[in-house]
Length: 253
Image (cartoon, rainbow, N blue to C red):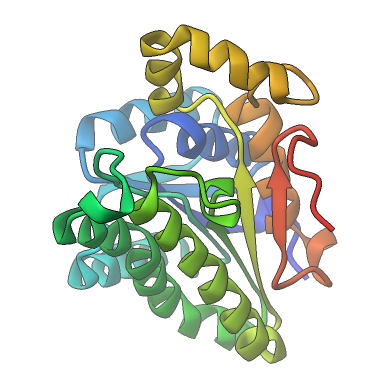
């Protein structure tokens, strides 16, 4: 079984926030990291940071909802590094908040195509290589927004709950191939969260007061190490799980 520093990982949405933190964390631990994003400039910046650390990888533009491009990215990864061992499905686009009765088809489609369906496309493209080597790690990203039904977030929340369903079914079907599929539900200071805090400081302070640790997580220091664990050999008997990474705010039965 490969150690993390022997693995090749694809991290979607790696140009900022949680995705960037994950890419840097995996690179620091020796993995070769391929980062994707719809815009080239942010993922190039992340890759510059990785190379300054002495890491290896590629920055490949990709919209996860574009199945043909997803297949190309996986093929380029395998062409450069021989295989793909780890897939981190972090990329997600979403529209504006709206009550259920005002949620549009376009908003639903944006969330689902970039999230659940895009995650599925990457999983399907990586599957043959993981199956062949009888080992693989897939880490998808969901949200407490869906688990707890946060008002105003129908498009995003329903998509994220679908990601959890996708995770559980894939874990059930692919376990026999040595592929572990898990889901992380983070509370972290993503760029969107930071902007929200600036726009609504009183609401942000009230929400932080409800948290057990009084803060949101740091993408690289609090969320990424969980992904690193799920990517490595020590998680070989963990699959189909939803891991809350929110400082104990959501204590689930």
